[in-house]
Length: 107
Image (tube, rainbow, N blue to C red; front, side):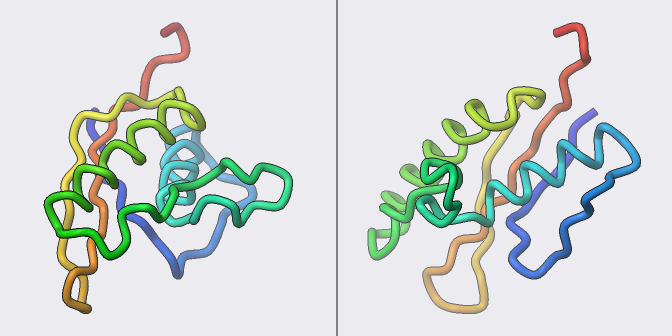
C-alpha cells in the first residue's frame, strides 16, 4: 500500500505510535523536515540544504537525490516510489511529497 508523506515542520512527535505504519511514516516525515547538522549526536541525520538558492530544476534534482539517499540510510523499512514537489507560499519554496511503500517484516 502506498502512503504519501510530506515535510511537516509544525507537527507533534508521537513517542508511542500505536502501529508500525504510524511509526515508520512519522520517521520519514521527521527525516524530511530535519536539516542536516542539527541533530547533536548524529550530525549526518536529515537533509543537506545544498539545493537552496539554485534554479528550481537543479534544486529539485539535488533535493530528490538527497531525499532518496536519506530515506535509504535512515528508514530502510520503506521503498520510495516517487518524489514530487509542491510550491510553497513563498516563491521558489519546494515542499517534498514522497510516495512510499512499507516493506514487510520479512523483506
